[in-house]
Length: 421
Ligand code: DI6
Ligand code: FE
Image (cartoon, protein in one colour):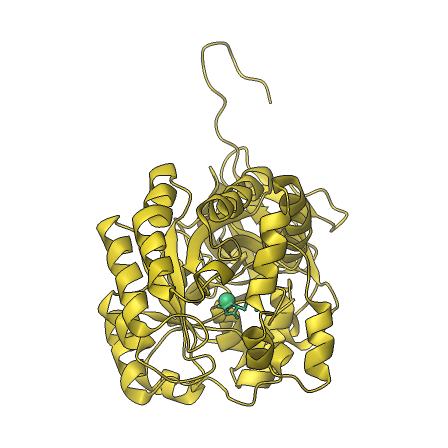
């Protein structure tokens, strides 16, 4: 575009037509579906979305036909551990032979074996392997991805993991949100002194991470094979002093008071929740804490316990879904597959599952104000699908039906063959 000297060119709007739009707006039925829709993007945000017949084309706008494809909000993966060294397929084989996840963890395997591999990996190696997984997620429709640390468990390696996550965010079209998970498990060198490790987190790791601005939130794993509710409370209290929001892995393998601690700290989310009680769910609803459900872990571990989805509905706890992408319990980097597993394994409706990877995932990251639905004022984070109906996203398996993605109005990738504006 040309402009006369001294004036800046008017920002060009992009108008998408010949499309169905699933806005996923709250309180709207059937995915907020608008069958013959138009969507206007200006300066990286959605300025208008509605039925095409009501569209007023802004002057100078660039019109683009989506040839009948469906547009949804860009998907949001609100819980991943996708930066790590090595892989654990040998452990997977042992579990297929009958060993349990807890047996393997007790024998020094599990998370601690990935910690050893991650400490040995260079920044370059960590970046290279994580890039493949982030790229895969992006091609399954993701525009925002949370990445946790937690395979370093010492100051240097926790910092390295978070630096790698920040670098991935800087180089990828995907927006990366980072979480410090130093309280993942007790590392080998502190096996006899778990409280000493909690002190290291509080006195050294957390302040160093906060000072460098490397984490957007703080997480912990509350479980008999990880940290107690009292230890989680200590970590969360330190996070609060630094002004950092918290979230928690809890009630995955057994019930305890972890959820109560999370609610007392007004956690953004509690994740897993297979063994959550009615009282705890009521408290989560009261605190506005999102339930993040991780069906990839249910699937990979062959767990029989299911999160109490019916009780969550009754109490009005918003449900998000995420990949939990990690080498031990969920080697998954595909959000469309998670929609499928959320429906088939956990009993969500496909509409709930889609809300789980859009609107409610945004809430789980504290980002609901600017993303997660397609509404005026929100970021133009969009996923374009080669389907006619939103239900197809969770229906087809492994079909790779996401054909384009925009992040803040810019093309992340485009394989529609049309050259998106
Ligand atoms: N919960 C999980 O699902 C992962 N970590 C956690 O706290 C599992 C991580 C692993 O096995 O490597
Ligand atoms: Fe996890």
